[in-house]
Amino acid sequence: MVFSIFQGGAEHCVPVVISKIFKDRAADRSGMLFIGDAVLQVNGIHVEHATHEEVVHLLRNAGDEVTITVEYLREAPSFLKLPLGSPGPSSSHSSRTSSPLFDSGLHLNGHCSHTAPSLPSSPTADEPKYEKRWLDTLSIPLSMARISRYKAGTGSLRSHAFEVLALDGARSGVLQFSTAQDCGDWLHAISANISHLMLQSMKMANKCCSPGNQVVHMGWVNERLQGADSSQALGSKFLALKGSSVYIFSSPPVSTADWLRAENVYNLCEVLFKVHKVRTPSCSTDTETSESWRRWNWDAAAPCSCPRGLQDSRAWLFWVMDDYWLQANLYLGLQDFDLEDQRPYCFSLLAGQGKSHIFMVELGTELAMWEKAFQRATFLEVQRTGSKTYMCSWQGEVLCFTVDFALGFTCFDSKTKNVLWRFKFSQLKGSSDDGNTRVKLLFQNPDTKQIEMKELEFQDLPAVLHCVHAFMASKVASLDPTFLDSHSLAGRYLHSS
Image (cartoon, rainbow, N blue to C red; front, side):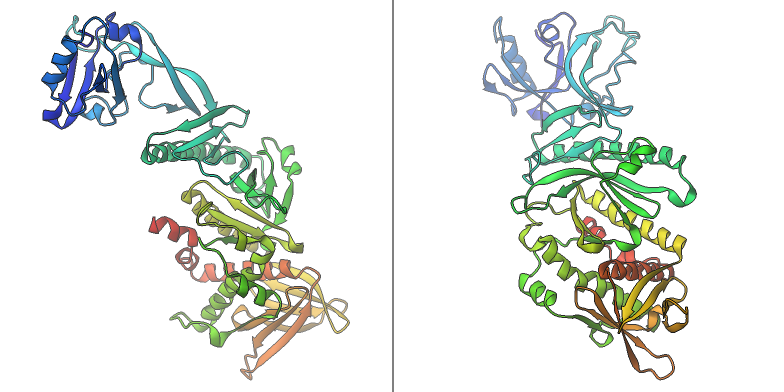
């Protein structure tokens, strides 16, 4: 007989499963059958629902040549009382069959070979032993590797498949899975391994950095390429949050000198991070907003139960995030980009001088990590700097506008340094700007309770607004650490899924 022992059958509600293979028999010599394989067909006859006795009878009467169709059964280890994750009781300590992921590489298994066992697999010396082990035909280092579920350079999603690409150029090729569950399990397992190794790389890099210039987070993202004919074109970028800046690389920095070779570097306080909702923004609303002054006032804000000062700061903070982003959508072209059908895990960076980037990641967990990392990196930078000052003007006078974490907003004469006005964050009741250079800030006078309008003109207005947002978000977070977590869009994605 081809097999020495096999178990299961319709009477056990499982297919017949190979449980033992005799050495030097036909099954052993073929090198294609393994313990844990479920027998699906014998000479073209389907036996998935056959009893144990029926399959035994069919095999015994199959003749000198038999064609068998098998499939590895996920539940076989528990059914055969074998260690989970192992195709059989292995006697070789070097085979390491417990998981195809070990050390820092993805090992793709190919053919098998015969090795002599170092220890008997059971107390009985003449009992058949499992003597096969997997050999690696391709090994891919996972340190700073990346995963792609999408066809190269496009937004087309592969079905139940992905590819692993190593830093040294090695590729796994497209790994195709029979079910979405299998694909998801392997995708998350490999991604977790890559994330763990990335964390180790960050720790090594931080040993060479000062306390104020530490790497907070880094990893691979896909960037939407801008251009007339590139609405679905994507390019791989390596994003890093380090010290006061966000870095965009074409390849990961592996040395100290590599940090000087970034394609783009932005100050964290002057960048607006946005997780996109899985919907297409309204074009009509965006157009109307971009052609008029964008306004906000306290009366339009929804009430909440928090103290008034914190309540005002919260309301202004989320006005900046939502209303200001409407205009940015037009520039980024998001109204033409179907996020729901193509790339649900998307976030954008809007920097000063009209510069912007749209990034996509493979998993919802990655999106949540980037959102949290940007918040943490920005808050650390705000606390380190304490304040930022920008040159501005009004009615021909050159002024300075300072955003201070402790004091709030201050405007003073650039020559005499005389303070013209100062207000706390909680006294900001509204704002509007022309989307170009001018902004109107509405403050409540603490004595008269009247609203005072302060109009200023900046050379790079987006950078100033982003800075105000960063400082106010940090202020709110310092007073209520759970507030931003409760409003995390990526977190709600994960919770709902």
